[in-house]
Length: 347
Image 1 (cartoon, rainbow, N blue to C red):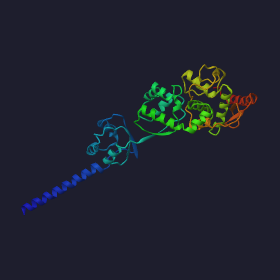
Image 2 (image 1 turned 90 degrees about the vertical axis):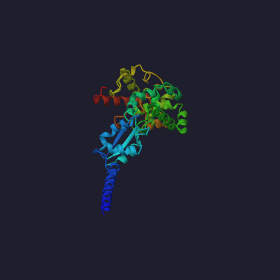
Image 3 (image 1 turned 180 degrees about the vertical axis):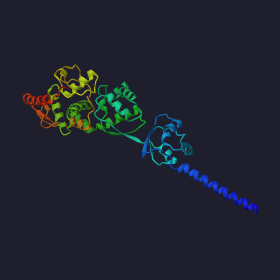
Image 4 (image 1 turned 30 degrees about the horizontal axis):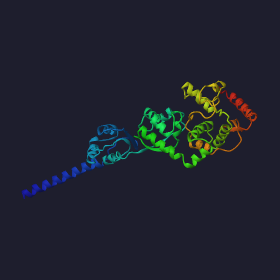
């Protein structure tokens, strides 16, 4: 009887112990182990981060690190070679779910448009992925890359076609650049190349002209007409005489790209710069901004007309008045000059 009593007690203790152990194990694996108020947060783990660094990064979001570590060890997470990336943690996750999330690198939907310079573009991208602006700028200006792909420092901005792209946050500067070069080649389909050839323009020249069209008008439905004007000027040997190129030249000379110039003055037209199309014939050496796809396609699909001149409209704001002769243009120009002076816009 005594033996049976001892065995019975031992069994109760053992079962109780197993229940407690099972409960603790279940809690450690499946119990809530987050401590942030938001519904979800992203954590960013840099390239070459080790396990100890990962723990420091996620510590503000983890309720009990020892519980996380127990599960991480059981799932061999510390031995995982590549830990870098952008990872999503959701409120109420347990340790098992957290470890699983740290294995799933979430891509970034990267977007950019209308960057005026390569430096601005590098800064824009550097704010969205791990690579910083300096490493990106260095990659963009790499001489070997430029030579192999037919670009120069002045025109390589034309390689980046504004759109929405998917990248992993921990993408290096070189991998970003190379993928964008691939996207550029994909954009220039046989159909687009044929249209450029028909206009006697290279893809880079199309991008340069498109950047001027892009800056001239925000009205997408007007861009083919504006493109037609510039193509008419090029075909007749006229200077482009595009105000946006003068504004760019002035900013480039001053080094201040933040200044707002709403009115081009006569003295601006004398700015000595290859970007000043009032002073120099043909296209400038590179784009004056990053043209979007509508501007690129406007150049490739220009409106056919005889217009040589255009001026901002004072009755249909945002659009322009077009003219065939200098006399017609002068009438439109005087209307605009009178209107802008009345507004008190001196610069």
